[in-house]
Length: 585
Image (cartoon, rainbow, N blue to C red; front, top):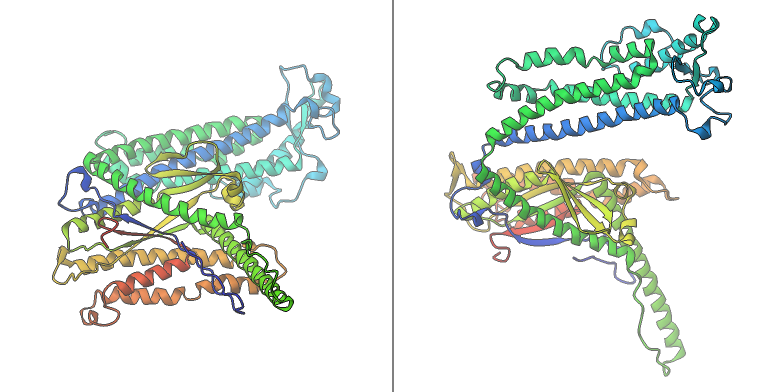
């Protein structure tokens, strides 16, 4: 770890740079007793890797979607329940939802009619004031318009219902419930999120991944294929028509109708999840899965250790104060010299304070950056793919980094042992921090937000690989270039996210400095990124072009590794250097 500081007396401060570098032995499954042969990237076909990844991602999306959908359905139920059964403290206030003239009927439970009644001064013209304009809605695609229709229909229908002839005939008066504007907005919001989630889940259930899962599991259910599933699904999830009907005829059936809808969606999701699990079992090889788990654990330990050191160094900048001078005063020193020394000491203290403030500002920007764009982990490999054992390590490392993308870091105040939870598809690692450190985190991380990991791998053998082939007439140099090219594309995508974050003015802290000047200061370290990116492209392409192998671009990997390190450093990456043993190179 090091930080470059501005020398005392300089007028132009240097750019603050902080690196976290960890060295390790490359992830390897050789400890299983298999010292020869290929690694996971070779053993797992490209098609199988993509299929497994798609199925696992779909499982996670469906589980999270159902959970969120049920939460929004519960919000609708709780909101309407609070209107139907208000707290006793609210029944005597002027803003009571239950009108005073009906207080004598509170004890009656049978035969009571309950309906919405929206106060006239709280009604707004939402652009959906005619039922004729709402009759055309037949599915969940017009979410906002459909939801606006529900409240409008509910308002107009219930107002007429309250003043219907039933009330004038001497029968029991209904309990008139006033739906305030605030609760109208909440109901709008809950229904909007509910319909959006239902539409998202239905889109996943109609997707190509589900179709393929049905095709691969049709032997288990001969009488039920994809066509039967979709024919049964479509009419039962037509949420707009069903909920509009209940709101028109009996608005208090809305919670039950929402509950039925969520249960129906959950049932179909469970059927698809069962098929996905059956397909995953077909692809599962216990030995390969054990090896995959092993190399993933090795890479995860390295990621946690490297990030912990980087994070601790940044947080310590907020805790460290200026250095106190322990120099004893010299009684015999000339008064003029003492004054000069005092002035010099004041200048030095002022410079140290400025450096410390700049360090803290840089640390705060890095925390905001990883909170928004994620954490880049730069794996730098010195493995030689022309050597059998190191080639297997490199293949294992590729798959381990693919699994590392499914990890998210979270932060909690120190309360006990660290937590690692959830599944292979979405692993959650919690860092327990002392209160002081925890309070330095951005609000999003303090409130439960996570940091996604973006691992990239740049590799360059230091030995000559001429004349060696990987497989299918692909040279080891081409194989190495493929790895670097794929990682460079990930760096480009991360840079786009980071640049968008810095250019978003809403992320800037309030300051008297003009926003253009602040953005220019934030973007200054990134100005050379595009040039470094083009230089990396030239290094990678040179390995694929025989005439360039003796040029500067085609020289040994010192250039590629140093440029990739500089490129990732400017993006705030945490660095991990690896070779076959962690100390060999």
